[in-house]
Amino acid sequence: MARVEYLNPPYQDLDQQSHSAELGMWVFLATEVLFFGVLFTCYAMLRMRWPAAFRHGSEDLNLWMGGINTAVLLTSSTFMALAVRAARAGDSRWIITHLAITAALGMVFLGLKATEYSIEYREHLIPGLNFANLSPEDQGKPASQQNARPEQERLFMIFYFVMTGFHAVHMLVGIGVIVVLIILTGRGAYGSGYHSPVEIAGLYWHFVDIVWVFLYPALYLLRQS
Amino acid sequence: MAKQSESARIYWVIYFTLLFLLGATIALAFVDMGHHWNTFIAIGIGCMKAGLILLVFMHLHWRDWLTWFFAAAGFIWLAILLTLAAADYSTRNHPSHSSPKGEPTLLAPSE
Image (cartoon, rainbow over all chains, first blue to last red; front, side, top):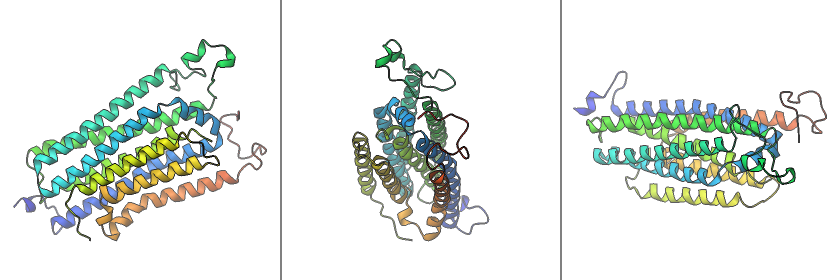
């Protein structure tokens, strides 16, 4: 009976409905590719225009915190994939466990990101708020030992905050979706017969992971010529 | 549509491959390979990671051509955007800073 309850017009059966839902999510993700793609394109053009300033900007970011966050996101994606697998098997206890781990790792990511932002605030790296051409440590040093920031490092930091900020908003949305899925799974909404929402939420979560997979090298790792 | 195995093993294999690629890309960030090789290799490793996530975590490996078509759509438009933008920027201002036309005027060049 449960299979029939979830069937909506105009679909003939649940497989057809799930397939359509999946294609719909891919269409949404195509718009997301272009949303982040425009930011990446502008970033690449400006980086080609002012390579030294952007390199200096990358060096001012915390490579290791970004790396740990990448590992956290990859781990969360793995648990999301396991949650979808549990949904196919109709095992609601494991759906909830894996979704909860995924959401918790998402929170860890956001916590580390917030810590990074606070470090960047102390380093006077936030344009419009406190960006300075010298880091606080360099201000007391004689001019010959100062590592002054190029003027266009502001542009780099603007792109850094806009791109990672939009990514963090996507993470928040994803965590919200997962919490709703956990509640609905607890009420017995999803099982082996019907689990389309878990599948397409998984697609969204993995996509947000892919965005970070490109953000991390583009912003943090390009430190050489 | 190929039938997907229900074993969890493939997800863990992909997970450790992704962690290995992450370690490789961090290690290579400390090596100066010159001639923009650092950029190409970092983007290449990023594409490999994204490919593994798309194929296995997002199940594209087991999907039919229609799903591939929908999944590719955004990336095809992005490729057009990148190609045309790169064609514009790479053919402007030869030699650099010599032309008053097409130079960004918002910020004065300092390098």
